[in-house]
Length: 400
Length: 173
Image (spheres, rainbow over the protein chains, first blue to last red):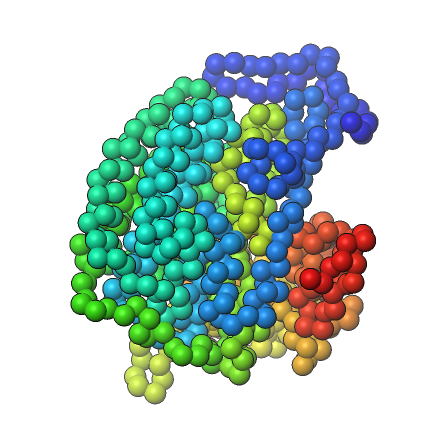
């Protein structure tokens, strides 16, 4: 405990006011106290440390400290060949490995300027969307556990297990896949692929509805998230938010639509944004709703892709992979829509080496988390937990 | 696509149009436009004008670059300089995107901070400082972000030598 002097409060102040309750403190001037939350706090979802200056139960300022999981991704990239970077990208956002690989591979392919077989594109999209659902399930499950609801967590992990075993069956690994390669795929999918994925879609659709009801119609959950941590759209844009965070603030911005890659332009899906009927646009509940609704859209994408995916007898998914990946001199910024937002790579190639001169990862959580200081001002400590949970950070990607 | 021999994609043409507006206003403070297909960019030659250019790009009604996607630090050992690359785009107004490069001297060089223009730049500039060691003038809170605060050296510089020990722990493995 550290003394920081008297809080500059008036003798009466309203901590929080909504339609049901008003908390008023009278003559309760307290001294500021520094509260270090994390790096081993369960609600920080990893090794994030928040240094909160608190005035009683109210957070005056919360400063995030990062780097506990820094593994020098960008330094490693300068020392390995392009295909060797792919496994590193898995370990950034370890809940959505396929999505991270996809973003990296399409960036290098942009620089190489090569054609990708249509079948490969469809397999990439299907696995990426499966991984997106798995990632959202973890986000929703852990968010519920942060707010005291234990059951949804078990439901989420039960369903996520189906996806992980599907992906294990396809790629050989449960979380760190190294499946999408530059120019192709590590393996073609097994023979029963379409059947088993279709089975999963049929199985999961009612479960998603059940999960939606379990949380978003739960009064305690809604009370904990409604009208908490509001981020207006223009501020969110200025902070560089992306993904469900930005959409939660009412901005219809999805890279699958706005900067399309792969075969997304051919697919029909919605970009859900909150309409303000059920939540306040930009609050924690809106961000949760966007994630919950996105899973249904992912299912639609998977179904359409399964229909359209061409069957090729004796398909070799590695046939078009260049023997030596040495892009021409130049620089590129490529990106893809990850479950957590925009994952971008800035790559500089000198045209001579098989290693990049510079490879920067623009991590979505890193940028989303940077608004934490502003979001946390004047919140109660339990609400701070709700806000961190709604940002849905993966520290592997924040720290790289 | 235009006629054969002059294949410039619509995206690059849009970036070029944005650059034209900046060139008209700032003249020689910005370099020629580099119309490569993967990441069209221009460079800010007069570093002191960088904040003015950034504000102009954000607020001009024909550009509205209200979204900073990424800011990356880069080392240019051959030129003896460090630099940043900013990827900018416009959400809700236009579809154009452009990249801007700003460079400074390798030793003791500084670049004006644009974290007041785009909040995104705040942490990204801290990261660039952490990895490359250029100073961002006017940054509200320029500290290391990913490395520990008492780390020596700037890891992503091309001539970086890792320290032997850190608090008694052997560093190179």
